[in-house]
Amino acid sequence: MTFADLGLSPTLLKAVESAGYTVPTDIQAQAIPPILMMKDIVGIAQTGTGKTASFVLPMIDIMASGRRRALMPRSLILAPTRELAAQVAENFEKYGKNHDLKLALLIGGVQMGDQIKALNEGVDVLIATPGRLMDLFERGKILLNGCELLVIDEADRMLDMGFIPDIEFICSKLPEQRQTMLFSATMPPPIEKLSKKFMNNPKRIEVSRAASTNKDITAFKIQVSARKKRETLEWLLRNDHVETAIVFSNRKTTVRELNKHLQREGFSSGEIHGDIDQSTRIQELDRFKSGDINILVASDVAARGLDIKGVSHIFNYDTPWHPDDYVHRIGRTGRAGAKGRAFTFVTDDDAEAIDNVEKLTGHKIPVFGKDDVRVALKGSAPKQTGEKPAADKPAAKTAAEDKPADDKPAGEKPRRARKPRAGAEAPRQEAPQEAPSENEPEPIAAQVEPRKERPAKPRRERAPRAPRDEPKVAAKPASRERKDEPAADGEWNGPRPDFLGVGFR
Image (tube, rainbow, N blue to C red; front, side, top):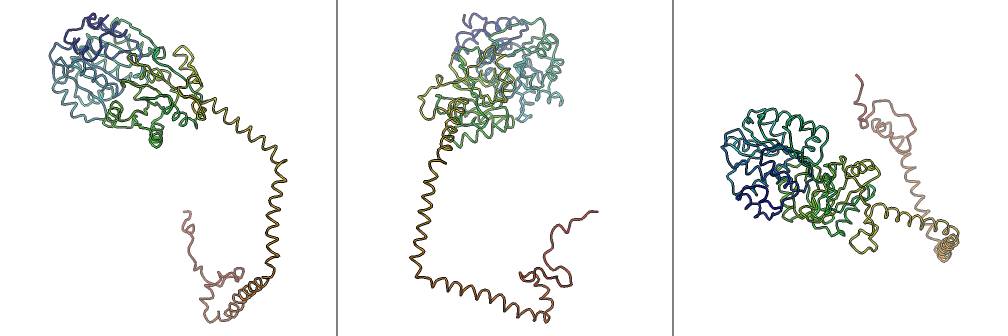
């Protein structure tokens, strides 16, 4: 089957062919025909299956005819993150270059003025995140009365991020007579309920639910302690033939710290997470796509919506808390027939999380071992695994420490005793040789005697002169000789301690 068999227009087929695609994926082959027939659909598909093009292509043909009106977009696509929304916009620009379509992108992190200006001019396709769209609703800057088509992309992610109430509100503002498409990697009960509430007899399409079933992805898990994570990651980055890699972490602070650490170690890396503004995110993604950096450290905010060709490796530096995130993380590699490898670091605290992942994927993730290493193992081999090297190194150390602990006290005591005896005899022999120089201690004693006389006699003689200068005598009770003597009558004239200024009122 080719794209020409799906009912797309010749103009659109030219754009698809120029992009290098001739054969549709499973989700595209099953979704495009019913969308062109204006039917509601529920698409359950993993990331990396061409899901975005499955609704972008038919939408371009549907929106090709019609009239634009100010503040009233003709179609709406909701995406959970800025990255995913921007990715959808790129698909429209790539495939719709031969069509006269007006596109607007409403996302946070950029100025709202330009977005409102685009809406005033009228748009055919509006791509938005729920948060920014709700802001425009509150300001009265947008109307959805003329929206003929609605797409809810990554619905399960919307659920995780708490956007379902916003989506329900947005759907209530749309006309009842519309076409609705919902796409999700999984179908939890709240999403099922949402589809039944706002969709009209949708056609259900399910393709390869778990990304781990992708034969182009080789997945491993590595048992490792939290302290050994960085060392293990560095070894894999250097020895597993990494071309480009995305390293995922559960926390934004870990993303920042890990990126700085990799840069200090000489790696070409960048970072992307929720605290970075949109312009900086775009710059980092462009650097990664262009090859200026080959390692991208990211939080889950970037796990979905990144369509970057040639990602050879995925590293789950932290085992994802939600099993669905595992599906979306490793789906960044092994795309469009390319091969990829995915590593998940598992600590003792991650036992439950990895079990949930394996329940979702339907099989056990194999443990990375010596047979999976891509380089010849020498002295650095233990670094490549998490559990085995950690067990081997301490065993070797303890064995080495236990044996000498038993042998050294028995066999080395006489040796240690001889060495100090030899060292002790040497100075004793030198002492008698230098005995003729016994005159040296006499001057030392002579020096000690005047030192005793000087502080004793003159100070005692000056003591009786004290009554002449009474204030001076009162100021000298701090001398070593009069520490135990009672202080003279009068006020304390030394520095005032700070704690005296503190009182209770």
